[in-house]
Amino acid sequence: MSVIDCALMLNVMKQPDARDWFSSPFDTTDYTTNLEKGIQGLRVAYSPTLGYAKVDPEVGQRVDEAVHSLQDLGAHVEECDPGFTDPIDISVGLWFSVVHQLWTAMSPEQQALTDPDFQAQAAQGAQYTFADIHRLQLRRAELGSMMRQFMQGYDVLVTPTVAVPAFEARAAGEVHFDAQQFLGWTPFSYPFNLTQQPAITVPCGLTSKGLPVGLQIVGPMFDDALVLRVARAYESVKPVARPAI
Image (cartoon, rainbow, N blue to C red; front, side, top):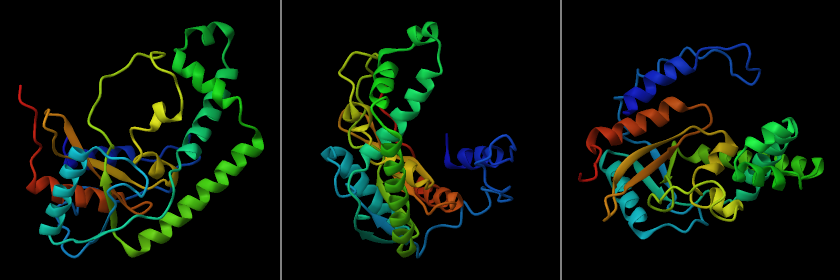
Protein backbone atom coordinates (compact mmCIF):
# COMPACT_ATOMS: atom_id res chain seq x y z
CA MET A 1 0.00 0.00 0.00
CA SER A 2 1.33 3.44 -0.93
CA VAL A 3 0.74 6.76 0.80
CA ILE A 4 -1.68 7.65 -2.00
CA ASP A 5 -3.62 4.48 -1.23
CA CYS A 6 -3.74 5.51 2.43
CA ALA A 7 -5.11 8.93 1.49
CA LEU A 8 -7.80 7.38 -0.69
CA MET A 9 -8.73 4.99 2.10
CA LEU A 10 -8.95 7.83 4.60
CA ASN A 11 -11.30 9.70 2.28
CA VAL A 12 -13.70 6.79 2.67
CA MET A 13 -13.09 6.11 6.37
CA LYS A 14 -13.82 9.73 7.36
CA GLN A 15 -17.43 9.52 6.21
CA PRO A 16 -19.85 10.27 9.07
CA ASP A 17 -21.46 7.53 11.14
CA ALA A 18 -24.02 8.63 13.73
CA ARG A 19 -23.65 5.33 15.60
CA ASP A 20 -20.22 6.47 16.86
CA TRP A 21 -20.77 9.21 19.42
CA PHE A 22 -17.00 9.78 19.67
CA SER A 23 -16.78 10.73 15.99
CA SER A 24 -15.70 14.22 14.98
CA PRO A 25 -17.83 16.55 12.84
CA PHE A 26 -17.84 15.62 9.16
CA ASP A 27 -14.48 16.36 7.57
CA THR A 28 -14.72 17.70 4.02
CA THR A 29 -10.96 17.38 3.41
CA ASP A 30 -9.77 15.51 0.33
CA TYR A 31 -6.65 13.85 1.69
CA THR A 32 -5.13 13.47 -1.76
CA THR A 33 -5.08 17.22 -2.48
CA ASN A 34 -1.74 18.34 -1.03
CA LEU A 35 0.20 15.09 -1.11
CA GLU A 36 2.72 16.42 -3.61
CA LYS A 37 3.27 19.77 -1.89
CA GLY A 38 6.64 18.73 -0.44
CA ILE A 39 8.15 19.48 2.95
CA GLN A 40 10.43 22.44 2.24
CA GLY A 41 10.73 24.45 5.46
CA LEU A 42 8.76 22.10 7.70
CA ARG A 43 9.95 21.79 11.31
CA VAL A 44 10.71 18.17 12.14
CA ALA A 45 11.48 16.89 15.64
CA TYR A 46 13.50 13.66 15.51
CA SER A 47 13.47 11.46 18.60
CA PRO A 48 15.51 8.26 18.11
CA THR A 49 14.40 6.73 21.44
CA LEU A 50 11.69 9.02 22.90
CA GLY A 51 14.10 9.21 25.82
CA TYR A 52 13.54 5.68 27.08
CA ALA A 53 13.41 3.04 24.31
CA LYS A 54 16.22 0.57 23.63
CA VAL A 55 16.58 0.46 19.86
CA ASP A 56 18.35 -2.17 17.78
CA PRO A 57 21.44 -0.57 16.18
CA GLU A 58 20.45 -1.52 12.63
CA VAL A 59 16.97 -0.10 13.13
CA GLY A 60 18.49 3.10 14.47
CA GLN A 61 20.87 3.38 11.53
CA ARG A 62 18.17 2.97 8.89
CA VAL A 63 15.99 5.57 10.61
CA ASP A 64 18.91 8.01 10.86
CA GLU A 65 19.41 7.65 7.10
CA ALA A 66 15.71 8.31 6.51
CA VAL A 67 15.85 11.47 8.61
CA HIS A 68 18.79 12.72 6.54
CA SER A 69 16.58 12.25 3.48
CA LEU A 70 13.97 14.51 5.07
CA GLN A 71 16.68 17.14 5.50
CA ASP A 72 17.65 16.73 1.85
CA LEU A 73 14.01 17.43 0.96
CA GLY A 74 14.23 20.79 2.71
CA ALA A 75 12.90 20.04 6.20
CA HIS A 76 14.51 21.62 9.25
CA VAL A 77 15.31 18.70 11.57
CA GLU A 78 16.08 19.02 15.27
CA GLU A 79 16.95 15.97 17.36
CA CYS A 80 15.05 16.15 20.64
CA ASP A 81 12.84 14.08 22.93
CA PRO A 82 9.32 15.21 23.87
CA GLY A 83 10.16 14.82 27.56
CA PHE A 84 7.83 12.12 28.87
CA THR A 85 8.72 8.82 30.52
CA ASP A 86 7.58 5.46 29.19
CA PRO A 87 3.75 5.41 29.47
CA ILE A 88 3.46 1.64 29.04
CA ASP A 89 1.71 1.27 32.40
CA ILE A 90 -0.99 3.71 31.28
CA SER A 91 -1.53 1.86 28.02
CA VAL A 92 -1.67 -1.66 29.45
CA GLY A 93 -3.72 -0.57 32.45
CA LEU A 94 -6.45 0.96 30.32
CA TRP A 95 -6.28 -1.92 27.82
CA PHE A 96 -6.39 -4.75 30.37
CA SER A 97 -9.23 -3.15 32.34
CA VAL A 98 -11.35 -3.03 29.18
CA VAL A 99 -10.47 -6.66 28.40
CA HIS A 100 -11.66 -7.58 31.89
CA GLN A 101 -14.97 -5.82 31.21
CA LEU A 102 -15.36 -7.82 27.99
CA TRP A 103 -14.46 -11.03 29.85
CA THR A 104 -17.07 -10.52 32.56
CA ALA A 105 -19.75 -9.97 29.90
CA MET A 106 -19.06 -13.42 28.41
CA SER A 107 -20.72 -16.67 29.32
CA PRO A 108 -18.54 -19.45 30.77
CA GLU A 109 -18.83 -21.22 27.41
CA GLN A 110 -17.53 -18.15 25.56
CA GLN A 111 -14.72 -17.65 28.08
CA ALA A 112 -13.59 -21.21 27.47
CA LEU A 113 -13.09 -20.43 23.78
CA THR A 114 -10.75 -17.49 24.33
CA ASP A 115 -6.98 -17.85 23.98
CA PRO A 116 -4.59 -17.89 26.96
CA ASP A 117 -3.25 -14.39 26.35
CA PHE A 118 -6.75 -12.90 26.35
CA GLN A 119 -7.43 -14.70 29.61
CA ALA A 120 -4.16 -13.38 31.06
CA GLN A 121 -5.10 -9.83 30.07
CA ALA A 122 -8.52 -10.20 31.68
CA ALA A 123 -6.95 -11.54 34.88
CA GLN A 124 -4.56 -8.60 35.08
CA GLY A 125 -7.37 -6.19 34.28
CA ALA A 126 -9.34 -7.49 37.26
CA GLN A 127 -6.70 -6.00 39.56
CA TYR A 128 -7.58 -2.40 38.63
CA THR A 129 -10.05 -0.49 40.75
CA PHE A 130 -12.20 2.36 39.50
CA ALA A 131 -9.83 4.77 41.26
CA ASP A 132 -6.86 3.18 39.49
CA ILE A 133 -8.50 3.64 36.10
CA HIS A 134 -9.41 7.24 36.91
CA ARG A 135 -5.78 7.98 37.83
CA LEU A 136 -4.61 6.40 34.56
CA GLN A 137 -7.05 8.56 32.61
CA LEU A 138 -5.73 11.68 34.36
CA ARG A 139 -2.16 10.70 33.49
CA ARG A 140 -3.25 10.11 29.91
CA ALA A 141 -4.71 13.61 29.81
CA GLU A 142 -1.43 15.04 31.15
CA LEU A 143 0.48 13.20 28.43
CA GLY A 144 -1.90 14.50 25.76
CA SER A 145 -1.52 18.05 27.03
CA MET A 146 2.27 17.73 27.08
CA MET A 147 2.33 16.54 23.48
CA ARG A 148 -0.05 19.28 22.31
CA GLN A 149 2.33 21.84 23.78
CA PHE A 150 5.39 20.09 22.35
CA MET A 151 3.88 20.04 18.87
CA GLN A 152 3.43 23.81 18.93
CA GLY A 153 7.15 24.01 18.19
CA TYR A 154 7.18 21.43 15.37
CA ASP A 155 5.12 20.37 12.40
CA VAL A 156 5.80 16.65 12.85
CA LEU A 157 7.71 14.28 15.09
CA VAL A 158 9.60 11.33 13.60
CA THR A 159 10.79 8.17 15.35
CA PRO A 160 11.52 4.55 14.51
CA THR A 161 8.32 2.59 14.01
CA VAL A 162 9.35 -0.30 16.27
CA ALA A 163 12.48 -0.81 18.34
CA VAL A 164 13.60 -4.17 16.95
CA PRO A 165 13.58 -6.04 13.63
CA ALA A 166 10.69 -8.39 12.93
CA PHE A 167 10.69 -11.49 15.12
CA GLU A 168 9.01 -14.87 14.87
CA ALA A 169 5.32 -14.95 15.71
CA ARG A 170 4.52 -16.80 18.91
CA ALA A 171 1.41 -18.78 19.68
CA ALA A 172 -0.86 -17.47 22.43
CA GLY A 173 0.23 -18.79 25.80
CA GLU A 174 3.71 -19.69 24.58
CA VAL A 175 5.49 -17.16 26.83
CA HIS A 176 4.73 -15.58 30.19
CA PHE A 177 2.35 -12.71 29.55
CA ASP A 178 3.16 -9.30 30.98
CA ALA A 179 3.30 -5.65 29.89
CA GLN A 180 6.73 -5.96 28.28
CA GLN A 181 5.79 -9.08 26.33
CA PHE A 182 2.62 -7.32 25.21
CA LEU A 183 4.01 -3.93 24.14
CA GLY A 184 7.72 -3.72 24.98
CA TRP A 185 8.80 -4.27 21.37
CA THR A 186 6.73 -1.32 20.12
CA PRO A 187 7.54 1.58 22.47
CA PHE A 188 6.94 4.21 19.77
CA SER A 189 3.31 3.40 18.99
CA TYR A 190 1.28 3.30 22.19
CA PRO A 191 2.25 6.81 23.38
CA PHE A 192 0.52 8.31 20.36
CA ASN A 193 -2.45 5.97 20.61
CA LEU A 194 -2.88 7.46 24.06
CA THR A 195 -2.51 11.07 22.84
CA GLN A 196 -4.74 10.45 19.79
CA GLN A 197 -2.18 11.87 17.37
CA PRO A 198 -2.20 10.70 13.74
CA ALA A 199 0.81 8.60 12.78
CA ILE A 200 1.97 6.66 9.75
CA THR A 201 4.84 4.28 9.13
CA VAL A 202 6.78 4.22 5.88
CA PRO A 203 9.41 1.60 4.93
CA CYS A 204 12.92 3.02 5.23
CA GLY A 205 15.23 0.13 4.44
CA LEU A 206 16.25 -3.36 5.44
CA THR A 207 18.46 -4.90 8.09
CA SER A 208 21.44 -7.04 7.11
CA LYS A 209 19.09 -10.04 7.28
CA GLY A 210 16.64 -8.44 4.87
CA LEU A 211 14.05 -7.51 7.50
CA PRO A 212 12.08 -4.28 6.95
CA VAL A 213 12.59 -1.17 9.04
CA GLY A 214 10.03 1.62 9.36
CA LEU A 215 10.07 5.37 9.91
CA GLN A 216 7.14 6.66 11.98
CA ILE A 217 5.79 10.14 11.26
CA VAL A 218 3.57 11.65 13.97
CA GLY A 219 1.52 14.80 13.49
CA PRO A 220 -0.45 17.18 15.69
CA MET A 221 -3.89 16.00 16.73
CA PHE A 222 -6.30 16.10 13.75
CA ASP A 223 -3.61 16.94 11.16
CA ASP A 224 -3.73 13.65 9.26
CA ALA A 225 -3.22 15.50 5.98
CA LEU A 226 0.19 16.80 7.04
CA VAL A 227 1.30 13.33 8.14
CA LEU A 228 0.35 11.94 4.73
CA ARG A 229 2.12 14.80 2.96
CA VAL A 230 5.41 14.16 4.80
CA ALA A 231 5.14 10.43 4.20
CA ARG A 232 4.50 10.99 0.51
CA ALA A 233 7.52 13.29 0.23
CA TYR A 234 9.76 10.61 1.70
CA GLU A 235 8.15 7.83 -0.35
CA SER A 236 8.67 9.79 -3.57
CA VAL A 237 12.47 9.77 -3.19
CA LYS A 238 12.94 6.43 -1.41
CA PRO A 239 11.28 3.50 -3.18
CA VAL A 240 10.42 0.58 -0.91
CA ALA A 241 13.37 -1.78 -0.49
CA ARG A 242 12.22 -5.37 -0.75
CA PRO A 243 13.94 -8.48 0.66
CA ALA A 244 15.70 -10.69 -1.82
CA ILE A 245 13.66 -13.78 -2.73
